[in-house]
Every structure is written in C-alpha cells, then in structure tokens.
Length: 459
Length: 109
Image (cartoon, rainbow over all chains, first blue to last red; front, side):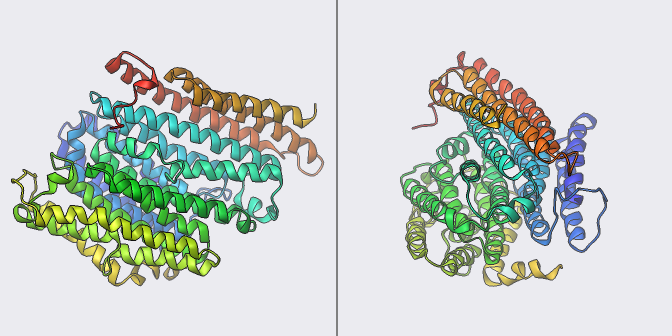
C-alpha cells in the first residue's frame, strides 16, 4: 500500500519538478530519491509498518510475495535510473514527464502484483500500458518510434478488449470479481467459464509476449527509444508475469489440469520461436527483443506448473533477468552502432565495460555461477516436479543451448574481433555501477537462497 | 427479456469489433472497432449485473452492483486510452500524412 500511494504521489511531484526547475540534474536526483523512498517504504511494509490505513475491502492484498516482488522491482528500477538516467534526458525535451510516466507505470506495477479482484487486475494492467504507449512514441520526429507506438497501442488495446470480455464472461458465471470467490467456486469448466479463461489466457499472453501473440514485440522493442525498451522488456514484463501467475493461481487452480496443456504448448512455441528467430538477427537491439521473448518462455514454466516453488522461481527469475537486461541495455544505448559489429574490439578499448557485458550475457545465456543459471534451473525443476511435462523440459534445455549461440556472438565480437575504437560516454560512476550490477548477478547466482529465503522470513 | 439475447448481442458486437480490427486498414477505424469491443463488454456487464441482482434480491439488496461499477472504470480507462491513442495517430499523421496502417512496415526489414 505504501508504495502504491507514494508512487502515484511521486509521479505528480515529478511533473511539478519540471515547472520548478529547468536543471535536468535536479530532476534526475528527485527521481532517484523517489525510487529510494519507494524501495524503503516497501521494505518497511514487509516489516509491518504501514503508512496508510485504507480499507481496501480485499481488493488488493499486499502479501509477502507481492511486497518482496515490488522490492525487487524497485531495486531494479533504482539501478535502471542510475545507469540510464542520462540517456533518458537524450530522448526528448520533456524529461520530467518521462520520469512522471515511469512512476505511474510503477503504480500500475504495484497494483498488478497485488490485485485480488479482476477490477484491480484490469486497472493495474491499463495503468502500466497507457504510459508505455506514450513512452514508446516519445521520440516524436522518428518514424520508427511513431510506428512502434501506434502498433503497441493498437495491439495493447485489442488485448485489453479480449481481457475485458474474459472478465465479463467470468463475472456472468460467478457473480463476483473477487479472486477468492472465483477460485473457490471454479471446480469444473462450464462453457462460459472456459471461454472467459481462454480469453484471459490469450490477453495475458499478449501482455507477456508469449507466442503466438508475440508478433508486436520485436517491432515495438526495436522502434522504441532504447532506454524505454529496457524498461519495457524488464520491469513491465516481470510485472505482467506476476499478474499472470496471481490470476491463474488465485482463480483457476482447481481446474489446472484442464488448461495446463494449452499453456505448455504456448510455452514450447514461445521458446522455439523466440530462440530460433533471435539467431538470425543482425541488430543486437532486435536480438535482445527476441531474447526477451525466449526468456518469457522460460518464465512461462512457472505458469505451467503453478506451485509454491513456481512463485519462488518466478521471483528469482525476474530479479536475474531484469538485472542482466538492464545492464546490457545501459551499455547498448550509449553505443552508436546497434549491430554485432558495433561490439567489435570492445574488449581492448573498453575492458571494464566489456567485462561487465560478458557477465550480463553469460547470465542471460544461463551459464553456471551467474544468476541466470540458477533461475533457469529453478524453472526447469518446477516443471519436472509438476510431472507429465518432460517433453517441455527437454525443449527448454534445447532452446537454452540454442540461445548460447547468439549471446556468445556478442562476447566473441568483443574479445576476438578487431574494430576501431567507438566512443562510449562513460564516467567512473557508470563503470562502478555496472560492476556492482555484475557483482550482484554473480552473488545471486552463488547464493540464490539469499533472495528466496526472504519469502519466508517476513511472515 | 432472457439473458441469452443480451449475450448474443454483446458477442455479435464484440465479433464485429474483432473482425474490424483484423480487416480494416485505417488506424482510426481500427481504433473505433476496439472501442466497439469495449462497449460490447459494457453491455454484457450491465446485463449480467441485472441478472445477478434479480437472482439475489431477497438475500442481498446490493447484489450485482459491482458489475455496473466495473462499467464506469472501463469508461474512464477507455477515455484515457482515446486521448493517448488519438495523440499517437495525430503524431503519425504529421510525419507521413496518412493514417493507413499499411504504412507501418518500416520496422520489418
């Protein structure tokens, strides 16, 4: 609750900060301050301190899982602001507004991660989406950005329409929007409930960009300004997954066996399409867009298996994936050349950045001793424990092997190819922060229980 | 009137909306079709709300009220979406002087 109210207030503060001062550095400091306040207030709520005592009527439930996920997300956003804050300023003129929209997205993220009625799910997803349509098109003169934003807008509101139809059908059958009521009474699938379930499944698959509803992702991620792509591909995708698993765990656990196969097929298709297409990309930004589809495929394992272990795994995967991708994008948006050739010779000219980038790529590929390995391991193990899905696990492992190819192409370009020196604006602070992020990824990879035990520490 | 008729009407409107989104090439018409989908949902929610209300009047006088509440939220969100969406379409029109979504192919290499 703390974070929800504070993030909305802070969004307004960011809007006014643009009126009060025209110095961008001040705006950036206010934004970083805001995210620190959000992080601390969420951690305080985990310890039992609530600033606001509204009666929520059970519409939002702030349990340990959602609060811990919010803390992880706010930590990632803190790193994102520190690493990419200067690049946000280069997108356009209205820097305070971009920060305000990012804070409004965070308000949506807190709602989507702790909803307990379908109304709050809808509002959360929409509060996430609408500012993102604007941010995608924030580079107003750029045709690609316009196109990405229009495409994202049409696809996003189309999937919202599907979701609303699903919600309406389930309301018709169950007479309530409350997830507890829906979960308690859905013991068999009547035609109306199954139609609603399928529509909800499709619209959530749209939001997390799972195949066959992924086709907007590469275009939108490619066209949007790099800094906002980084935000969309990490924070927003993780939040959509949390909403996804909360919806299906809360509402449809009893009929899990009946829809599990559909989700398993979607997962397999996502993994396959994401990885195979990523191999053929020439632009690293587009490759990362496809890689985000394939990582979404791994996160879908949590929804296939739907146990308590799946929640742990999803939380951990979100942390590992967000940190690594934010790091890669922070480096990428400072480069002029987005193709693989742009990375040529980086190991010689910018050894510190290349080393950090290597850690991020290793983590995304899932090499042991990085967080990405443990995250993939967790996801595959929950799928094995769910039983009957060995074929899916085998596809997952094969696709992870394929993904090594395109992640290692970047590392190979950095260390084994010569290229002329590219100007990358870096200060010591940027390098230090990249180092800290990389260190954190390795720390999480060696001590995964550090994060997961927190789920059971605050009770 | 039996609830089935409302359901059929809402589903028909919804399907017209989906068909429009898939077939039409003008961004504004696609957008209108999306609004049609949302309004089909509004109609369905109100009909269900009345149905649940009639079913449970004796026990609970406010039964079914949340369905109508939801409709207001959909209206508000749709209004927000319209303001953002039309702004995006105008921005697009300024750059390419067309609102045809067949122009949206620069990102496909």
